[in-house]
Structures are given as structure tokens and as C-alpha cells.
Amino acid sequence: MIPFNKPYMTGDELYYIKDAVTRGKISGNGYYTRKCHNFFKENIGFRNCLLTSSCTDALEMAAILVDIKPGDEVIIPSYTFVSTANAFALRGAKIIFADSRSDEPNIDATLLEGLISSKTKAIVVVHYAGVSCDMDTVMHIANEHNLFVVEDAAQAIDSYYKDKPLGTIGHLAAFSFHETKNIISGEGGMLVINDKRFDKRAEIIWEKGTNRSAFFRGEVDKYSWVDVGSSFLPSDVTAAFLYAQLENLKKIQSRRTTLWYTYYEGLKMLESQGLLRLPKIPAYATCNGHLFYIVCEHIEERSQLINYLKDNGVYAVFHYVSLHKSPFYKTVKDSIKLKNCEMFSERLVRLPLYYELHMEDQNKIINLITSFFDKK
Ligand SMILES: *Cc1c(COP(=O)(O)O)cnc(C)c1O
Image 1 (tube, rainbow, N blue to C red):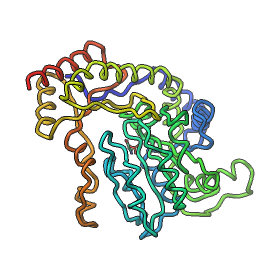
Image 2 (image 1 turned 120 degrees about the horizontal axis):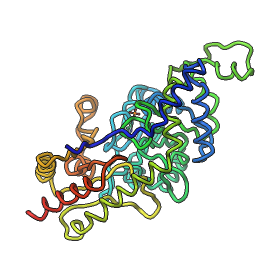
Image 3 (image 1 turned 135 degrees about the horizontal axis):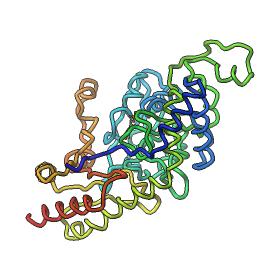
């Protein structure tokens, strides 16, 4: 069976973990945590960043930083992973779901204006598949209404919007290093802080509501409880693992984008025949090879395709049950209809894409999909 995902180990992980252990300090904010922070600052250009134990954690930090209070409204795409909304729901926000564009799953920025009310505090965008949202439109609307923008950049490492790295555009951004992402540490994430007003408080929230980081820098003579917070920082063992991956960022990205374009080239004939739809990369965006999907004609066809692939040894999956139709959300809000989001929830299929996917296996997948649609 060709799996859907296979976490890629670069081979240097154990070396760095051993070194972290040998150094004798494996709690958070240690040697490798700082090495990772520096890597991101120097190689991607993040102004300030903090490793977290997950992207979910980073989103929760963002919700605390923008000071979400019960009753505040936060606009979020419905076509996303549950954490994007949950982090804000946890602070009592009312989630206002936005629809996707018709041509790709990203949020339809032209709908934002109509969703804003006097209670709106923030807009959360998700760069689905690592492909940028229409950020000029999003930032323009947010600035006009004085709203915060949080980028859920979980899938968007090393991807760009008009030459700007994703994660540097909103006030805050959250990345994931979960083993299903491009760069991994098992579980892991990062908060990127673009608005310097958040610098000090972010560090405090990260360190359980204390000013411990300032204490270690010698800025205060004792550390105390100064704000709310939690234990958002990962162990230095996790950071050591991550560092091994980061050193291989270029290699990993190059392999994954090659696989992405091989799917694209191999299937574009079917698209031109009108048999399926392929991902669209707008002119302002780049492809970071995070995930490859196809869009079927309807839900029955998708189920048939997934079963056909499974019968032939290929594991493909669908995802994102629309959040506005989830059991939890339904208890708090009358049903709404988001046409494009529901369309992608019903018709989108993700194909296997991982560093070690062999060319022969990928060709087999392309041939299977071609024969599935040829038979129709
Ligand atoms: C993976 C993912 C998350 C969650 O990341 P974790 O690190 O598992 O918390 C959040 N949002 C999106 C869009 C994701 O793809």
C-alpha cells in the first residue's frame, strides 16, 4: 500500500538530540530553541518568533495576545482544521465563518467587508496547501476597520505572497511542525510576531505568565507572575529534532515541489478535458509543495475514486468537514450555508505526497487516476 503520508527523517535528528541531552539542559528556551529562532530570523526573515509545542498552541497565544474577550467576533474560514477556530472559541469569541473562493479553498477576501460588525476583533486567514490568501485585500480591509490579522500558516513554511514570506504579513502568524507538515518535529509549532507591540507580552504568555525570560537576560532581579499565560514552549529535545529538519529545508522543499509539479503535469490533461479540477496558484502566490489535491465532480465520484485507489494499493484522503456544519458549532449557531466551502468539503481529494514518495509510485498514482476518469 502506498501510504498517504510518511514522516521524513533527515538522518541528523538523533545527532542533535544526543547533543541536546549531553548539554544537560533539555527544558524549553534552551540552546536548540535559540538555534531554531535564529535560523528562522536569518533564513526566512521573521522579525521575532517563539517555538511552541504545536500550531494550536501558537494560535492560542495569538488569541490571548489580541485580547479576545467573550462576545468578541473573529472571522475565520470554515474550510480549515478545527484548531484555527478552537483557539479563539476557547477565549469566548463568537466565530463568524467565511466562505472559500470558488476557484480555490482559501478565504474569499471579497466577503470580509460584509462579515464585519462593531464586535469584530480579528480576521484569521489560512494559507491552505501553503498557497497564499489574497493578503493585500485582507490587510486593506483589516486596516480600515482596525482589526488584527492572524495568519494560520500551519501549512505555509517557505511560501510567499509577492516576495513576502507567509507569516510576515499579519500582526501574528502560527506555523505547525506536526509530522504531516513539510518540516516536522512530531508535534511542534511556532508563533511569529510581526507587530512589535506584542513582543514583550508574547514572551511572558509563553513562559507561564512570568517574566522569566527577562530574568535570564538580567533585565529584572527576580521573576514573578505578571500576566496570564501557559506552558507553550517545547522541550529543547523537540527543538533539536526540528533543527535537523531546518538544516535540510531547501532539500525538502525542492523534493516536495518536484513531486507537486509532477502530479500537476501528469494530471493537467484530465483537467483540460473537464474531468477534474487541479489546484490553482494565483499570480501573487507560490507553491511550497505542501499538499496536492484534485477536485471531483461530486461526492459520489470522490468516494468511488478513493475506493478505486484503495483497491489498487493507494491511500488517498479527503479533509475538512466544514466547521460551520460541525456538531460543536451547530449547538451555538443556526445553520448557515457556505457554498464553496461545502463544495470543497465534498469533492476534494488529497493525494500521497511525502519526501520519500518514489517516482514509480507517483506514476502509478497518476496512471490510476487517469484510468479512473477514462472509464467514465
Ligand atoms: C496542521 C494544522 C493546524 C494544527 O497544527 P498542530 O501543530 O497540529 O497544532 C492548524 N491549522 C492548520 C491549517 C493546519 O493544517
